[in-house]
Length: 85
Image (cartoon, helix red, strand yellow):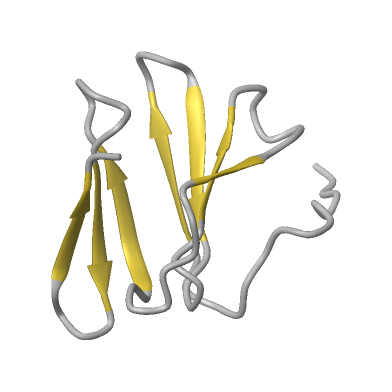
């Protein structure tokens, strides 16, 4: 019923969240930075995974249900980006 901010994480707008059931992990993507964070404790803390890529403007984010290393991201340019590292 109440919310608490997570300092140091957050973007402008259009950020995305996804959940990976096999690992019970949450993933959060920042819109204009293309940075993805992971949480394995239901959002209590977050760790940046990967690196910033200014060419990727995340509008949507999905993690493969069978492989938590494969992400798909929809971008504002209409291009579907895929990452497996």
